[in-house]
Image 1 (cartoon, rainbow, N blue to C red):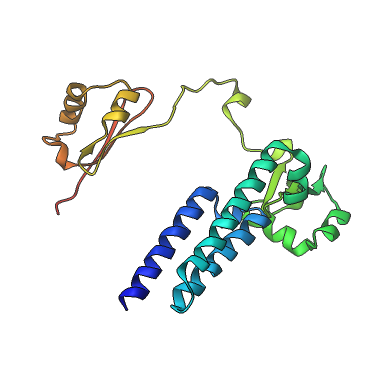
Image 2 (cartoon, helix red, strand yellow; image 1 turned 180 degrees about the vertical axis):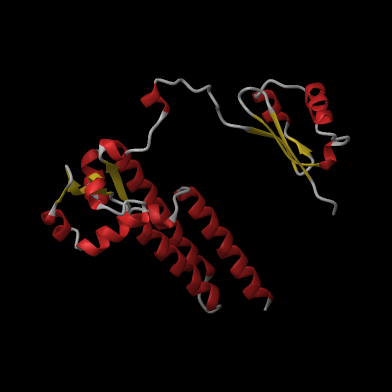
Length: 225
């Protein structure tokens, strides 16, 4: 039993490291070759995990081989547009200038009902509101609405909103992140003085504290535990 446990733990660690090296894309965002590699890696890891008669190295070597192949293809795709087209394909325009492109629908084996379903899921209930719909190489649908159907933004009103930036967490679950404090150019004295405004007597009371681009502090206290 201990042998099975250790084999499973080792293979799990290898698969997690390999998938981490492959990148952070979600399954829905994977290119076809990336999805194939992910499925094969999972299968190769499961076989020696279940069958102790198979040497562990027999499962690890193919996994590392697939990793190297995937990294190589990804690198070539970055450097060569031709390789990228061969491996990933090209986007297909299913709706162009408000009209459905039947040729592309047939080519991608994408029927009208599928198209309408995808549009509804994205909030476009009337196909007449769509200027372009593009089927990306990873299978997702990108939609560009007609100009009179797009949401209003500050530029339409000649407004210039204040820069918001990205809030930076400086305290998480009672632990101070000194690197983030340096990034937003604050010190411990400033932090403590601001926490006092929220009636925080100890940093241990803080679940989350973050600082935005205007140096405004957001604080959430821990509930009594």
